[in-house]
Every structure is written in C-alpha cells, then in structure tokens.
Image (tube, rainbow, N blue to C red; front, side, top):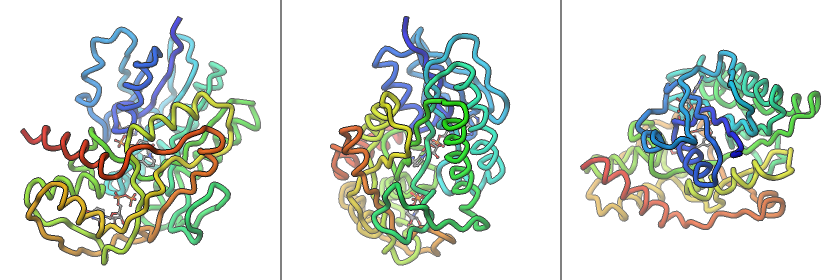
Length: 312
Ligand code: NAD
Ligand code: UDP
C-alpha cells in the first residue's frame, strides 16, 4: 500500500514539483490548495494519475482527510514579496492558523510533518553567510514582517508540537529557488527579468543592484526536501545554493543568456529588502549528504526555455 503525502500549497511553484517528484517515487499525493497564488494548470498533468488527488481548500480552516496520512508537507503560503504584500492578512493567517491546522492533521495521524520555512527568518542578516544557529534581524512592523513573522511563528509552533506532542517535525529553511512553473507575473527577480528580457523590455533592477541573492534550481531543492522528509532530523536545515551574485550581475547574465537587447533601469529599492543572502549549507551536507548540483547557468537555460515555450 502506497504511503500518503498531503502537500498544502501543492498547486504552487515548489508544490507542483514536489507532487511530481513524490508521485514518481510511488507515493499517493493529496494536493490541498485554495489557488490564491497557485493554479490548476500547474497540476493538470497529474489529473489522470490515480495516485493524485486535488482538494480545493483554504488551510486556514481545519484540514480533514478520510484516509491515513503518513506525511504532511506544509507549503501553503504566498511566497513572492509582491504576493505577500498584496495579501498581508492571508499570509499571516496561513503561516499561523494554516500551520496549526497542518500540524493538527499530522498529530491526528502520527504523520511526519515538514514546514516550508524560509531564509526570510534571518531578515536583513547581520551574519553572513547564514547558518541555522543565527536568530535573524527582522523588522516585525515593516511590510515584509507579515511573511517573516508568520514563518517565524510557524517554526515556533512546529517546535512546540515536536516538544509537546512528540511529532516528528522537520523545518526546511528554503533560500531563493527558481525554475519552470514560476508565474511570469509573480514579481520575483527571476520571472521578472526573464519576462522582461524575452519581451525586449527594460530589466527593472531595484536599488543600485548591489544586493545579493543565491539562487537554487528547483530540482536540487526538491531533492533536499525529499531527503529531509525521510530523515531523522528535527532541527531546522538550510536548503539553498551558496553561489551568490549581485542582482545587477544576475540581470546582466539573463540579458546575455536570452540574447536580449533589453537595457537595465534602476527603480526604488523596496523597504527592508535584505542586502545579502547566502546559505551556509554545512548542516545539509553533513546530515543529508545534500548539496546542489545544477549550476546557475544550466538552471537558467532550462527556465528560460520553459518561459519561451509559454509565450508561444
Ligand atoms: P507559490 O505562491 O507558487 O505557492 C504557494 C501555494 O500555496 C499556492 O499554490 C497557493 O495557492 C497556496 N496557498 C496559499 N495560501 C493558502 C491557503 N490558505 N490554503 C491553501 N493553499 C494556499 O510559492 P512557492 O514559491 O511555491 O512557495 C511555496 C512555499 O515555499 C511557501 O511556503 C514559501 O514560503 C516557501 N518558500 C519558497 C521560496 C522560493 O524561493 N520559491 C523560498 C523560501 C520559502
Ligand atoms: N529585484 C529586482 N528587480 C525585480 C525584482 C526583484 O531588482 O524586478 C530584487 C529585489 O529587490 C531583491 C532581489 O531582486 O533584492 C530578489 O528579489 P525576489 O523578489 O526574487 O525575492 P526576495 O529574495 O526579495 O524574497
């Protein structure tokens, strides 16, 4: 009998790739999503698979499932800064009440629980690169606070369920991840820059472009998540690619790789935008035997190809 995995947020970018990977490994996958930032087109290819089920549900409300559940992977939450600033209260609610409900489902079933946390728990970091032992530098009342604090609460309640109820919980601190199935309009740097380059529009770099990010290709991230979910680890684990670039370098690389004639324009930097970000992945390497394999250029080639196909 196949084991059952409930993936909240399964119709989003990362959730969709997790559904595909776990179906490929023989799991039964139940995707629970209210489609606030996800879409049915992301999961349409699984529709004929008898091991796949879609449940249209807002996880801020209690989550019930008729059969035994073995794993709960809690990925529901707007993730792009543009999305979570558009939906501040749903973001806080899914991070708080949604996480509580997902933990409740795991507790009822004695299932393994995995939280999709984020590098944003480190805020605008004063320690670089970021190791899991760093507690972060977050502005609770700034516009990004709705996401950062929701995820920090989610981590706290996850650990409380682990300590109080003995639930086998995992916390993945995910750093910027990119790949096919990102929404062209989600406002994040990767879809914005690729969309702009392919449309011969100017690439919008915020600030002077010196801010850094470290981008991880989706297949590497999914490999890390699956290893973590099957591991015995309960402490938070950073998952991301330590290959760090300034956003200006990154924009130039996309112009070069798309062969675009777009120029770069500089726009105001959004408030509290973290100045640097790079994961220390020593823990993931040592405990999961995991490290990213796909180079930024290879990942971008696959992602640009996918966005080109969508435009045809
Ligand atoms: P996404 O917006 O593409 O996917 C999020 C999914 O959650 C969507 O399908 C959305 O409809 C669903 N959702 C949101 N609120 C819901 C609710 N109340 N009930 C049911 N479904 C709901 O974002 P993503 O990039 O795939 O991110 C997925 C998860 O990974 C998020 O929890 C995010 O915080 C985390 N994460 C992502 C990144 C990244 O770089 N992509 C980095 C760090 C953390
Ligand atoms: N960014 C940019 N232009 C864009 C979109 C984003 O310069 O059109 C910058 C943004 O200010 C940040 C970085 O790119 O410094 C990554 O932004 P993204 O929205 O992808 O995710 P974040 O890491 O901020 O959550």
